[in-house]
Image (tube, rainbow, N blue to C red; front, top):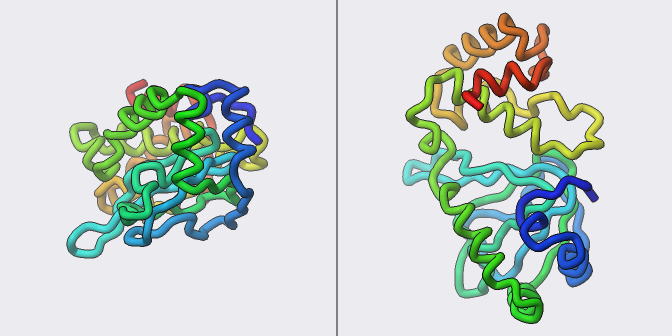
Length: 219
């Protein structure tokens, strides 16, 4: 399990996080597989232990839109946790992921028993901005800033022990789709980030300097 304190894990602390993890059944998800699918019934909550996932939704035309990225320490499926609701988004593994699966009833009982309903409410409020597509969250930024922010988030969310954690695990086409940019614009900005020294040269997308990438992201 990652030692990085983030997400819901950071809110409730290590003792309660370990207790929450012990309540579920462990499942592994290979890279590219779906943890949850949009439209499926609710009824369970997944506690992410390792790996990054992308949360995506489909618009009325059927186009897939990136909503958010999550990683170890986060919850997924928490909004449609009750059986009467359907999943409002799909969750797909970027890396090989491990998660604990809890029934919604067991999860709610855990919150109540440990008097951390307020922490869960805080976590949900913090995720409200992720109910709109990623490209809309960054709509007022320049193309370079949008691209740098997405790349930076992808790298920062990688597990500390990931063997290739500085590699951006998205293709140029995936980056363009996620940000609502043309493929040519993404290619142009990647070339500029390489010239700046934020990315390495070559065909693979690898971060060379986190500070330079963060500067381009406006952080």
